[in-house]
Image (tube, rainbow, N blue to C red; front, top):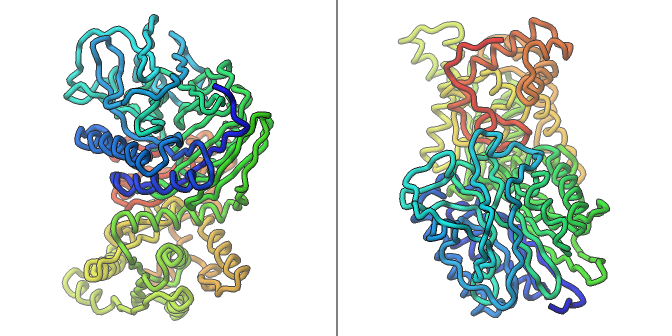
Length: 629
């Protein structure tokens, strides 16, 4: 094909919703329209665009896969009918493959390709890549191997291999994602063109670490995909495929690419955007072509996708960069002489802004995608509830935040005043519900003392928060931070009550840091700082007994957080922690608290993952365990 003077490629960084196939298709249509109007020839969307991501065990439901297939076919037809048929529309979806007569995995429902067959490059037989991330093989599961004599499928351009004629009836480690019907879900990239599925590619490396369980539900692909668009050779990959040294992307080094396009659903964690950049520069050097990285944006349960899509070349130059934490769109134009241009170069945020905005986006999307329009939380006057309230106001507007002050006989006047000032600053609804009458009623019957008496106060507050939630249809927010969650310094069914916990992955020292950042941002933009200064500077206290301070039960937070980061995120054992310079008493105390609190963490609400290792899917330990170092 004769090469045109330029190839404009649009990046459509959209916020998809898991299971809302119709809404996701509408976003694809809107992105295609923008691409067409701006003269693009290709428009690229994130991973699993049709279905949202991650879909977890929805992939194993045949009805869900059929709905996705039907949506793809209808979308391809609609694009053609709307005048966008000449566009190459790159999307992601769940595919279905089965063992056909010759044993190849075939994409179900794929139409014949248009004139001009794609170039496909099969993964070499016996390839054993050196990986930069854990792989299926490292997890103990086996991957299907590439047979030695592939035959070509003229319609899809994919390679096929001989068949045993056997259809599996159950999932096994050797056949991940198999269904009783013999179908196998795939994580697929599709190129829609001229009213049909023109080309397809199945993700080859299925992540099986941290928050990912893709090897459990999907079957891996086997073939690489390179197609010719207006004389430009474009290679394709899906997220994890580019994280593997000598993997699918690396294998395209001799394919004479003009661009490598990867669609992604890469969740946010602090500093991960720099890792993505370094990785794509490495791949660009291998294939001697720019790498376009299109990432999902938005919140999904405990994950936040930060977007930040970009294009980078082998010299490490960023050629285009989209916003983080917002939907965004841009057209990057590649020219025949190898030069390029793009009018989008979003400024990078500092680390505090990224973490704050990740927490806000996680909360906003959890509310929007589950149908909540408002939130309720207890306002103690302390720093944790103050930061969560500020995030809530940024997520849904202060008018949709209900803050409840629930003072006891131990609450200081300063704390009550700080709670009231905070509510006024963010424009929240504010009410006071003293718990002392309820506490006295319980005490007349139970006669509690010590920790049981303290926890009763917290649980009474939990009852009040949930009563407001039920009465007004509000999402109850838990205000605990990662330091408290780690050590079990919370009352189950008390201050741990709620449907979402915006700062559960934020260490206490970082809570102060984010609070100062938010107030500074307000001053820079001519706004009233939302968080009272007194809430930031006063010693933290649960105020459940006279003169109580957090440091009565825990090490000082600066020390505690340093130990927690080493023990949890770096997985340092006792000997390592002592070698790090921490004293023996502190190490033993923190390890004991963390290990004993697993049962509490299992019952804690969802909250956004913002660090390299969050509690939940990132760190899966048994509740019942006798192991101690």
